[in-house]
Image (cartoon, rainbow, N blue to C red; front, side, top):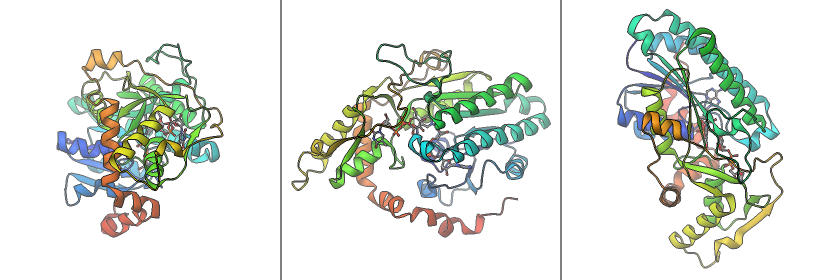
Length: 361
Ligand code: NAD
Ligand code: DAU
């Protein structure tokens, strides 16, 4: 075993931020297994081009022989599992891939990691970790005055996405309880920041508002989410991986509860300031209330006391500065946006990594 880590889903939003952060902060090799679905964008990792510490493998976490061969070949000291179908609205239309990737994919990784870990001995066996990145949506929904979700809150997932993630959390727990696999689970609130696919609330609103398009707010706009800057999430995962107690779960949140309508008006005002445009007028006028998401959870809130007390983690970015940074990032990366929108990003891998694809078996 060496000091490499195997990351799944490292070309997605949070995964790519994590890989970049890990190589900068820790400098040890990352094997990045990602299928490059519509949500995966290898160009997020363009700054690592030519860096031998980043080994990209296009493949499916459901492919047991591939996962097995990567574990055997690279002998990683940890597996950090981000890969998932992540968008609630898509899970309402086509839940199949959510069950396949989030449930069966996690099961496949657990089974292969377990076999790999069983073959390790001594310090290497003690050191190995399987970190499962999960969501606060497994806890269901809160009313205005309910206490925030803690690690002991009962699971009550409401969407196919949330149910698939809850299933995967239970599988992870079972592999620890039954066989002692040294797992860690993080349940995090809504992330925002660079490289988020523009189907999610914040990038969708930034780009629509920039272009003077309608801003579709679901229902009454008063659903509440707890927003965390993605860089703070990456730090939390690193801390849990390195110092968390095997078998434990850690809630991660931003202590930044905001109603959706307040997030959208903040984005409108920032864009009016940063990109004044007489033709569009005040961007708040673009807000359009639309039919609510079926089963829309009302409020999420995270009690992050455990990770704060045990690991001294707390978010560094405030929502007001983080959202300004995020709007500025999208304005500065319109080429990235255009690539995503045109679908060109899906050819990026063929152009840049063609010689490496399919060589891992
Ligand atoms: P994302 O949709 O941006 O990225 C998912 C990545 O997984 C993509 O690169 C995709 O290509 C890859 N992938 C999908 N199916 C795969 C498969 N079968 N095999 C290999 N790779 C596959 O997701 P994200 O927002 O970065 O979320 C990452 C993880 O964090 C997910 O597990 C999600 O549940 C969890 N999470 C997300 C948030 C959030 O606010 N975005 C909050 C808490 C937890
Ligand atoms: O809480 C963590 C979860 O946060 C993650 O597990 C998910 O992967 C991630 O997608 C996110 O889920 P949400 O459903 O909260 O995120 P989304 O960006 O889709 O929506 C945020 C809120 O904004 C939600 O209340 C629905 C609302 N919304 C969303 C969109 C896309 C709108 O009002 N209009 C929109 O167009």
